[in-house]
Image (tube, rainbow, N blue to C red):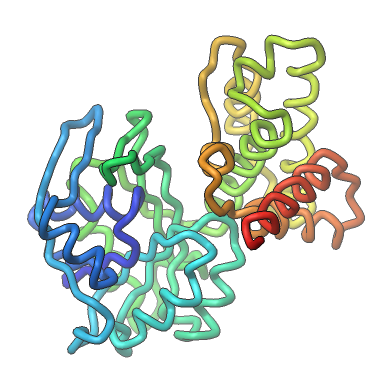
Length: 313
């Protein structure tokens, strides 16, 4: 299976490198400057599962000559429109597009550009960041990809979906990270959305790691209220967070010794652009559509939008 990784950053770079290590045919779609950097310094990973430096195959948009079997799309929300333009030459009639972006808004953009059939559902569970030397640093041992047909079907009469989803499963399995072929990928995507929105809301609005928040008066109560607001929106939209998962998030969100910070918070601290609208704003819109009161989520959205606007000046 010919795999094109779009986005050689902290997520795409990590999983792409692991797939290369496992002997898969992987190419990274990058800008010319990034291609030069990767050839000069290599793709470098620092990880609890083993460090690696490799010089991957790269291609720029103008160099794409033939369609790929699978496009692993791992850009952030802001460059999505440009990524769609760049990857168009790589999409053929049988290409699978496997996006692992946060939230749900990207699905509509991809379906509009490439059709309903091409777009799979996807969830990525990993905590990675780029350091000042452009190395990918894995922060926690968790590393998992979840994928499935958005229709929830693995089989249909033609056998078409069976063949492609099993081929995808085979390509991603046994590559030094966990995988799951999901029969309900939309629910899995909502579950992750509620988790990252909750933890992003808590850390960005309250201004610190989870443990510091919970060690001050009313910190734990506020964190739990934030989680309840996000979970209520998922439930109202028909995707209630499973109770065991909800309890696990509650434990994570109320630990007094936790140094955890969300990727939203880390981007905020760096002065980098944040995915305010796709992670929190879109969720808030869903809440408004169901007439839910979510004051903490609304306050955090306002805060991050003011911050995002300040970057444009």
